[in-house]
Structure formats: C-alpha cells, structure tokens
Image (tube, rainbow, N blue to C red):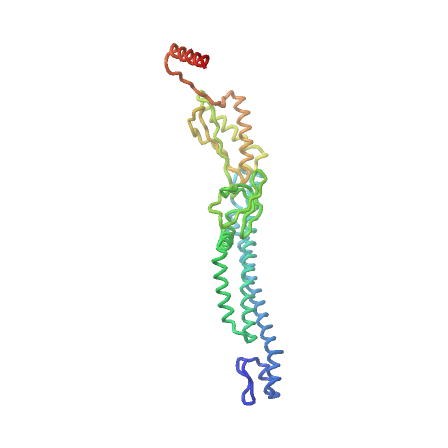
Length: 348
C-alpha cells in the first residue's frame, strides 16, 4: 500500500473505499482505515464467492459427466445381449450379468467423480488463498516459488507415494479390478476387499489379508471380469474307447447345462475339445465350460463329481499311476548277485 500525503490521493490499485473516503474527508488516516476495514475484506469476500461459484460450476460439470459414465456408452445394446439359454433362465442370466456390469460401471464412475471433485476443490481454494494474500498487500511471488520448490522436493522424496497414487488412478479409470473380484497379483492371490488410490486389500483362500501397494503391481490377472471358463482335463485309460468317452462327457456337460440350478452359472453350451494329452498313465480329454465370473470353481467341482459318477456307471476306467520295471541281465546273474550281497552282509 502506498504512503498517502497531503498532495496525493489513493493509488489506482487501492480499494474504492479509500478513494471515496478521501474525497469525502481528505483525511489520510480515515482513507487508510476504510481500505483495511471495508475495501480489503470485501475484495477477499468477492474472491471467496467467485471461488465457490467456480467450484459449483465445475462440480456440476463433473456430476453430469459421471451420470453419463454411469449409463455407459451403449446402454441400449447391452440389454439386448443374448447369453445362455433362451427363455426365462436366459433373462435371469443376462439380467444378473448386466446388473453386475452396471454396478461396476457406477462404482468406477463415482470414484473418479469424487477424485475429480477433490482435485478441483483443492486447486480452486489454493488459487483463492493466494489471491487473497495478494490483496492484503503481500508479495506472493516468493510464496509461489517456495510452493514450487516444496512440490519438487516432495516429488523426489515421495516418488513411491506418487507412483502408488498414479497407478491407483489408472487402475480405477481402466477398471482393471474392483471389490469382489478374484485377482492374481503375483505374490498375493485372492478376493479384493478394498481398492484405494494407494493400496489394494485382498484376502486369500486361507483368510490371510494382503495389502499391496498399487505402485508395486506389475501385472494383474482378473478371474472375475465379464465371464470365466472352467477347463477340465479328464484322464481315461488307454484301453478305453475315446469315441464313447467323448460322447459320455458331452452328455454329462449337456445335463449340467440343462440343470435349472445352474442357469445363470453356465452361460454357454459346454464343449468337449478332444484329446489334450497322451500321458504316461492315460489319455487326457479336455472339457470347457463358459461360466459367470467367479463361479468357475464351483462349476468345476460339480462337473468332476458328475463325471466320476457317470464313469462308474459306464465302466470307464479313470487310470491310476502305472510303472514298468525292467531287470537287466539273466536270472542266474541276478541270483549270483543276490548271493554275493547276502555273503557281504553276513561277513560285515
């Protein structure tokens, strides 16, 4: 603030209240007091109101974007997808999967909306605070420079934290996984219980809770996204008729497909892919079933149980480990070696 004297009026950069009081009273003290009591508080209040209005506008834009993201890009076509059986079972199945996908989309959109709102609020309020300090007559250039240096120092000192947050943002945006998904993070495999910008919490099959920093996740295997597949390699003996084995497996798979209890779990007609391997103990025949996400393990257990019961009924052998032992040399040589070993044992 400039110094006033009897020859000068208020400077152009001073508040209007200073000039008004000066013209009315020509008193330096009153003009100076009017600027601090009326002018500067009103200017700061105006900045706050402008900041709040800007924040409100930005939040409205974010809310509108989030609502569009919740509806999806092609919501009309998604409802016409046909998976699984025709009829009421198919409707239940498609409805369940569509609702699951919609819930994931809504959760992801709201998470990103909340994050964007926090960022915009922080940026707007920071600008308002800096401009308010400038209105009070302080030089904000050193403050901005110090903030830049501090941000640079924090960036170098907290690289892992920054990496965790950036990885968390991209994971949420790309919908790599969500709460309830079965995922494989390398060292940790289990069900996701919570996803934040810094860490992911999941629980493995033994009940152990794992906390994994997002910045340390190099790859993600999601076993619960959109759909899953059960792949079973069924071993039978070499003496079995593979044509019969394939027909029996197709019958068992089709019975599971038609079972009302598995409507919504198996989403496509199962298929027998054929001979997968000629092993040392038997022949492996591969069966594949496309299932709803997260249900592939239960379907696999049920399928194994039904195959075992049907094989027992059909008399199809499930092979056991077999080994052939070859003895080198003649029987006489073997007897002499055995007698020599017995003599050495007796002597010792």
